[in-house]
Image (cartoon, rainbow, N blue to C red; front, top):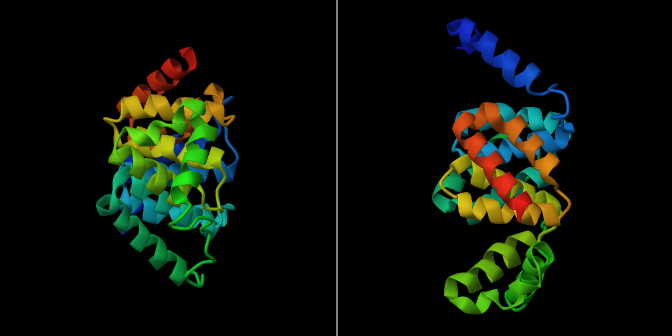
Length: 228
């Protein structure tokens, strides 16, 4: 049953805030594709499965491509793990199949198991700077970070590096407890052209889905990154 029937007073206020006031707030607006991509990544980050199921069709109807959706979900495995990413992959496949989208989608991989480490390091350097060239040597987790997280996923087509950093920022801000990494990826976003004002818009547009505490924490991380 629709929440508009069971909880009309709540839905009146929530709908006005999330779908009107926030969307149209002066100086905080985003284009539909960017806004829906950020919301999808945020809902994955906060484990909002029911809300994700509700929002995904709207995202597809407003210009987010099936490939972009899949890339958002795939990349979530690096920042949330398979256990928390899998329900969203299953929901995505279910909704796409119901909409007549043929699966699997066209492949987006650009690396092999032989060159994924090298290509992943290149992506890290492009996003974070020259000091990342040797970071993978600090231990096997750092090597996995370069080869798996960046070499397997950031090198895929379907999203560019700026978009990938934006959704990573959303994953981290939505799950909370990742403030050191959130500051680092706020800096990475800024290096990719996603400046402080843009990231503040991302937080504003996603606030209805993660609440005020995590949104305020994200804003503090953006400010710290900008100061550095």
